[in-house]
Image (cartoon, rainbow, N blue to C red; front, side):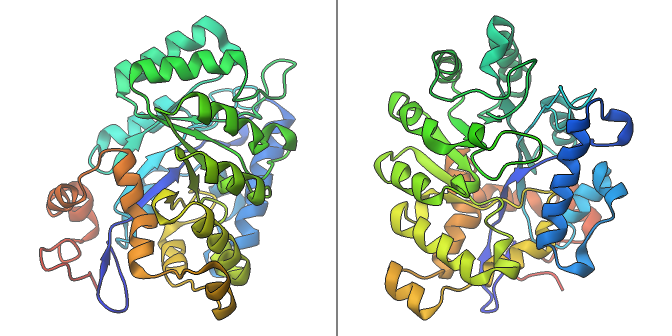
Amino acid sequence: MYQTEDGEDVFVIDSHLHFWDASEKNVIHEGGEEFIRCFYDYHTGFTPSEREWRLDEYRNYSADRMLTDLFGNGAVDMGIFQPTHLHEFYDEGFNTVDDNAALAADHPERFITNGRFDPREGEAGLRELERQKEEYDIDGVKLYTAEWRGDSKGWRLDSEEAFRYLEKCSDLGIENIHPHKGPTIRPLNRDAFDVADVDDAASSFPELNFIVEHVGLPRLDDFCWIAAQEPNVYGGLAVAAPMAQNRPRKFGEIMGELLYWLGEDRLLFGSDYALWNPDWLVDCVMNAELTDEQQDEYGTELSVDVMRKIMGENAARLYDIDIEEQKRQFREDAITEEFGLETHYAETGSAAD
């Protein structure tokens, strides 16, 4: 658990994780090379210089490194995998459901595996969605509407084909829908990530939760207006979060708008690992502040109570996580033993040195 300067514990659920393979041997299309280099540009653009990875290690990191980066200093307690297959670019896929699930199986108390779907896959895709639910009991799916498939360079969440899949999600009890609606990654189409198609989908499936990843950036206003009228629309803070490091005023503006329109109960922290490491990002976000002018304009502040919801409690509610029970489990789990976090999870709530 993250501990504030005042000694208050904050349970952190990183709601946006990847375990990817962009090694040169896995790249089968120039788009795959462009994609990982664009990711790396985001990484170097927002990461403190002393924490930057080399490109070769960024392409394909080990499970051990991921565990250390996430849990080694106790900043993150749990994480949610968000898959992105990209089979047009990568032979074995970029960040697949099955690879994520294999790592999660070794630490089931620490990870949640989400699935994915692509409505262009037709009946076979519906069967694959059923398999993911049966094998991994998924409660959520990550959707990548700009992913290439054959001659197609994207799809819409409000299409008839997509609605078939959303109906299947509803039938299967897959309640959490995570569409990527944020910055474009080379060479994907920017317009295929437009947030506009969330509106009809959210209205048509009120029983589902639409966690819009990257809060629609750079279309923040569009996202906020949609989310204000659709109570089942949430905002995932991946990509917005690292702005707390080197664009603190911009981060304050983004958070002010989100808190004004959505409120503190519909925002979820995500590091977007391995784009950025939560071992420095959590501290940066937790210590962010709105300026006096922003507090006056938006009528809010980033208090500990607000951040406690954003950093973990909201995700816990969506994924039916009992935080107190998890904390009890963590006192003796393998991650705690490996990284010496016994004091961190002690009943007194005191943090590790």
